[in-house]
Image 1: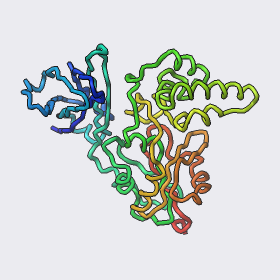
Image 2: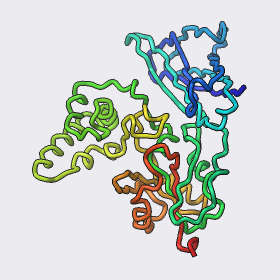
Image 3: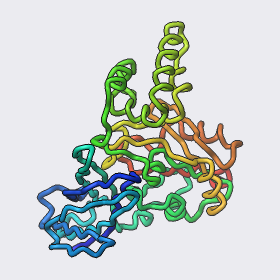
Image 4: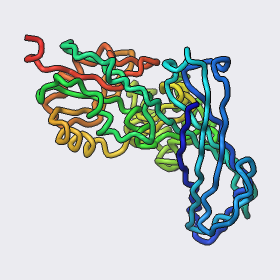
Length: 341
């Protein structure tokens, strides 16, 4: 038997409104194996009430009143048994959480999800190769991971201070918890109209993707950017919407745009990338960069600890060595000339 125990927090951000929580459910999913390889899986939920109310049992959620500016912690225990042949296949345990908010506003469901990583030490299978561009495989990253520690754990032992370690913008954002369950996004008429003006492959071509941007940048800014961008596009000037609507307009990844199990989440762009690069470079004694690369050969550098490396990074990542599918290689080490001698 294998067991995971974790805690989640539900907050009431309203100051003068009490919110009731009549139900709380957890749906665990083992990513990487088939259902017929699971012998048994059980979930236990225990609310950790600060007022010490008696909890009936592990199978019944007692309706709880969450007062203004207060929070409640919930302990989740997942115990599972699988076939021995499936142990090495598990990539992670994905917890899909669903609860109900009930109050003066009526009632509505809320959703959240996060990864409990597999304990398999994937760093052992990463070779200390001397390829000039070296993709690095990791476990499936999540909000419980510390980004700098991840870099420290997986960087090959034979790296040099002159090397460059890059990380994709979406994996960094995921570790920062910057992803939204699409079921939590309530699109309105504005988002449903504006999204129709974008190419079908754009992350803003859906009502939820566009609504996410509107929630960040504000409806006025997005509408004005959409109108100006549309007019200028008629005169051959493209991309103006993305320049005017805010940084997140280019960085939002809609569902299916990120590696599973985040393929059902809307992933925002990471925050404080410059600070992250500086702190990581200082900690690891290596150049660090946050990048956005696609299969079309487009390389965007969000931040780097050394701007002099910009051209080297773009040239090295044009072929997208990390990939955009299930390669599970969010890190790429670009080696300096010394390692190839």
